[in-house]
Length: 130
Image: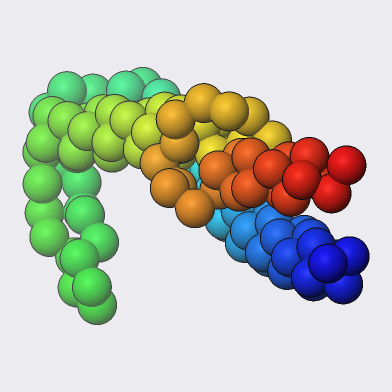
């Protein structure tokens, strides 16, 4: 009897540990993506502030692949604003996901296989052992 409970307990803890590691890796990846998006957003903002100092009739070249296209200042400005807005939305989405995927909370999570969902299983094994 005790051996089967120990095996169940070991299996439950191993499963919980695997889920914790998986969730931590996904959170780390989300953090890296957030950092990259923050850099992209900052780069677009700095470029936009420099462009706004130029005369309104100034034409500029936009890099597209290995070529450049002549665009007006207004078009470039709108593209940079859109780039900032998209980066901000993705950052908010990733931060929201990151907060909800904390492995030790009991909240509903975008990851249905978080350690929080496995925790009651471990508790039930421990309670049966007593």
